Image (cartoon, rainbow, N blue to C red; front, side, top):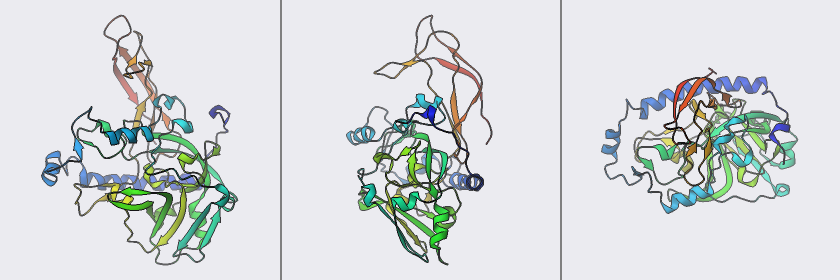
Length: 366
């Protein structure tokens, strides 16, 4: 395999960086809407219990993991957080969420259909896509359910994520905006629907995994059709042979095993659009679609783990803790935290869990 240390570092194009600034501005505005709809001041826990008095979807337990959650936890894994010491997450340590089955697609038989409100419908082979101008970008991706197990009331019908549902990889592909410009987007087009080859049942609906962007979002300039991850062809579990990458957004927007791009006049609202929303209750008449990632930071765990409990063990003394921060819109390699001081105090003069970390962490501004 290709070692990360041997990879040639790259610089994102000026067009890509300009699109990043646009996405960052959108992220700020979207966050305001989220807080207005479901923020602590707008919608309290008591408000939720009034709207969902017979709630069965959440639990306040911490050890009541269901058999279904266990199966999802085995199938879908988080990042190995110790890899935060590297700028780029190895493919095997990048978080992985597979909704249905992994389609094994023959690259030689692969076709991507681009259709709908376009001047010229096309069916592209993998070779056709790879002949296009390629670019590589480092993109931080995270699952919309990241940290679910830490919630006071845990949603029990999905993957039991800790804070580790993330990864930052080098993605190589071609520009979606340039491709759409070539096929010609017709007047009246408003929505771009991406369909993957994976099919299953969610919320009592049988469907392929599908997500959409507005035409404006799709044409921003940083969305890519990707065929490589960290300098190697995509693995089947990561969406081979081609997937979409939407930098700055939660991972559900980056549809894997891409088979169709349909441009429509708008109004489509599929299952995966309905699932990934901020909503006050299941019957919320005005759900707000989940879009961009918020600012977050995380420390690489110090010391060494106990195999069974995963408790970290440290020797007495001062330990320097390092981590990463990912700012809007999460496009560059996750940036190192500027750690001024972090004193780890242990309770006795021997190996002793858990440490108490005190000090200040200064994060660079984007």
